[in-house]
Image (cartoon, one colour):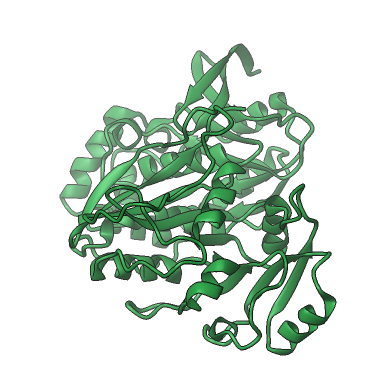
Length: 440
């Protein structure tokens, strides 16, 4: 019988969790719980087995540490979810035997052969513990974050209702590729080995975001799309003003990064002022990849019916507008190939951005890149609807233009990029990382 010994509040860089400590057969296990999960269905759950070398020391021999980190980032942005952390090191064989298995792998054995050579099974984990923890938490059904079909089968055998599987394929590189191929070929793990940016490539630094996008695109149950905010600014914080002449700030390398990110998102959103000022090419031109679906935030349907954005990507553009917008203009834009999504207006008569994101999610947009202009950027930030930022800082001083308006008027604490990192790219500096907003 598993027993919950203590529960405590655990604020983290990924968000605020409740931490539960369980004990069974003198072994301690943990559950990190985001939000309220009792009586809830379709709760996203990761059952993660302890990997000291990967989780704590960042070992590159496996993908465990990356899976743990990406799970916490994912749970940090959803309303409710659970990470069950089982103290079953080395797939149940313990730390010493796992280290001995590492040595055997260095001699040519794969991960399964090494375990068997040491007198163990390929996988000795007990998922009944996780099932009992989920039962104690009162979870009705789950969406399981895993690549392992055996984990799904075992939890179901112990009475857990698994509504769906959310793939979490991250972090393959030269140090763990053989290990991962062994898991796929010998243990039936569902890995696609998607093509990754080579480690020596100048854009390889952004791969953690690409992994998060892959996780979001695999989850049909999320309410909002994963939102990446990207923009370029000068050293004094200037960007192109809404309705003003465009500022060419980024270096060629930074522009390539922007197009690389476009190719990895389902949708690319700009405000109508950007369309009116520049009628930009919202396509992937500087790298290989598929064009995202253009999304225009246009509360009063000012998008010209002859705008090139209506025909440039090969996918019908989506225009987000209010239910009070002009029906005749809706018809004209629809006749030119646009998909019109109508949502309620907010108190100012503009598109309610939360409803807009729900509408986009229902339309199949699970990852959304927001490029601007300034008013649109401010709208997403003020509504706390950004998951990740990629900000290009270019060594120019423009003067007179503010990047983001009105965020400090409410007296809120500033938003922060958790795990913020910096990368030089051409003449620019790229600041990037997940966003954590102040607690309301």
